[in-house]
Length: 357
Image 1 (cartoon, rainbow, N blue to C red):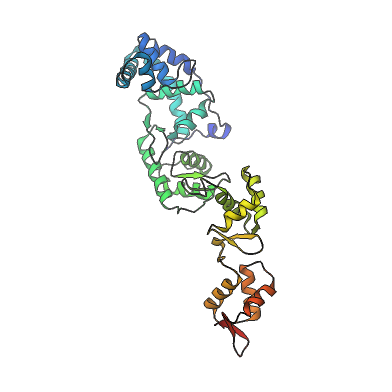
Image 2: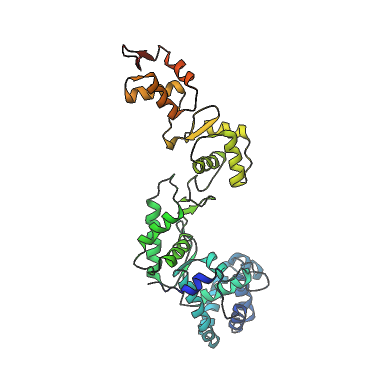
């Protein structure tokens, strides 16, 4: 069961800590030699420069190998943990642990540190305390998830398994609303979630940020992170989202304006028209009017639409053909009638019904 501090959840987005992380780490570093202090300070960004240096960069400064730097780092951390000063961080660790559990017991490293402080330097000091304490377990970034920390390995396993399962149930082009996705995740993790629905929804949103498999597009819809509907790569992908949000056919000039309005991307109308006509997701349904194929529109000119209708529905009279075609294309009735006169493709029977030639 994840322990929820409801008062914290409802009152603030920025967590409040009662200790000074820099003072804590400063006392801890005093147990090390001067060189070990410098290595740890640079490795974890604990000095005035908050940039965390790589093993190679530190090794280059000292003229030693990266492996030797790693040995110094590991030795220093063990030395701190065995020192008397280490016992002084128990209250601080307890505070951080409580905060981590209010965030769901497994947290996105960057998001969690930012929730404690917007100051990158302070975040580094908090991170160093996480590294030192056995109360926290770091799970390294991989292809499925970002760097994350947990206070409970069972909770972490349940959440990660649930996120994987959800991703498998989303197809390449699916887009899901956030409430739907949150609801689906809560069904998967019901055994570890708190009974309060409101707090559960907050937890679920935090857990979603851990995943690399699913992500959110600029319109707030969720899908597979690699989907063009989430990670847009060009005009066509932005146009798809514009049309999808609009819900009905749009002129390509309006689509271009929609791309600018929703995403701040410059889209020349002519370029937009050229891109849409080449993409099977879009169907030209009138003079410059585009619809999405997923709405049931089929590609092709009016003649192709009539042929498809007659092939599917059989003989139809003039009015029936017109009615069905107008559901597919925004054209004048006369355009439909002109195409029906094409004896190469259509014939009229004794009852005045049209059928395929």
